Length: 268
Image (cartoon, rainbow, N blue to C red; front, side):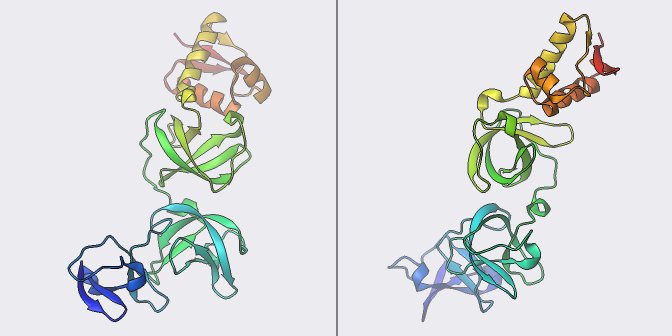
């Protein structure tokens, strides 16, 4: 709440932080003491708490793709995060030297030493370390964080990492773009397989059923197993070898199959 007029704006009640200045340029034209505002509070260049009604592109605990708008050779790069004061990406938090105009995927974090909000390209450090809780087929929001040999690593709902397989995509993606997706499968080890196509949800459980049906149709034994080539797996089951091995692993844990030689055998 605004509690009094100041020379350059309004002083807000900051609770335990005392009174915080909300500069005039960040307030509605007719703002006056007694009114309440939704504000974002951060430290300015002189380490003073400043309140603004502007919304940053990401807040502490969130991830975003931001553009580098400047580089200081002594301290790091500065990113446009939607506020008048740019966001610092220190050299220590960079994965490689960035350049002006480049867009980078970062976590927005509070630096414990300086108590300033900064950016970090070391996104894995700032993901939620608790076990993910998602349903197969659940709709999620994905930030494409990195291209890998298998496809694209994505940040799921600003919390967990997951993987989109290149073999499941109809077109390439751009690192930094945000897309709607689905949890395809939550693995026993907590890793997330993702999809952009809701019709493919639950593919690994479906694949398990396909494997069981193939085993029954072939007398309980299959020559295709976890040591088969990716081409052989795709020819027989129309899926990636990684998805096939995951389905085999799930069936093995359920004691539905055993591995025999280079293939698998049904346990009934």
